[in-house]
Amino acid sequence: MNRFVTAIVLSACCSVVLAAGATPAPPTIRVQQLERRIHDLINVRRTAAGLAPLRIDERLIRIARRHSEDMASRGFFDHINAQGEDPTARGKHAGYECRKAIDRLSFREGLAENLSDVPRVSRIMTIGTQKTYDWNTAEDVARLAVDGWMKSRGHRDNILGKTFSESGVGVAISSKDIYITQLFC
Image 1 (tube, helix red, strand yellow):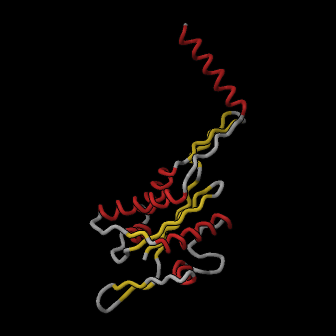
Image 2 (spheres, one colour; image 1 turned 90 degrees about the horizontal axis):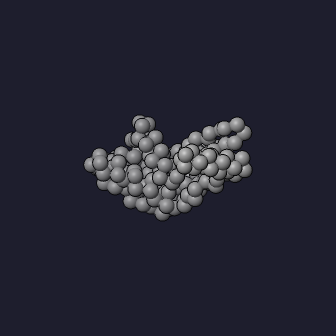
Image 3 (cartoon, one colour; image 1 turned 30 degrees about the vertical axis):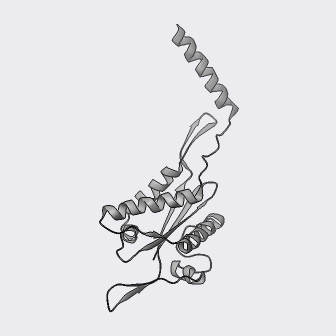
C-alpha cells in the first residue's frame, strides 16, 4: 500500500513538471575544454597506432575556431568559406603557412582539415504536446566527432598522418549544433 501511494505522488509530481512545459537548459559546454578534449582523444588514437602525439598549435586553434564560428553564424558546413578559401588559404590569410618534408627530396605544403557538425540534442521525446530533450554533453560531442572521423577514410588519414606534427581544434556552438574544425600541419 505504501509503494502504491508513493507511485501516485511521484506520478503527480512528474505530471506537474511535464504540464508546466519547462524545457531544461542545455548543459554548459566550455569551448576551450571541448577543444582540448577532442585534441586529447585524437592523440589517444595516434599513440595507439604507434604515432607521436600532435602538438597543440595556438595559431591553428584560432584559425580553426574562426572557421567554426563562421559556419555556425552563417549556417553552412563546408571546407570552403564564403570567400572561397580552403583550409590552406584561410591559414595563409591568417599568416600561417605549413610546409613539411616528406623525404630528402620532396615536401608537402598546406593544411589538412577535419570538420564535424554534432547536434546539441541526441534525442527529443514527445509525449502529447510536451517535449523532453536529451542533450549531448561535452564528452558526448568529443567522442561522436572523433569516432565519426575514425570511421571515414579521409578523416582517419588526417588523424593518423605521419607527416603531421601540429594540430589545432576550434569549436563554435549554435543553438542547434556544435561545429568542430580540426587543422593539421
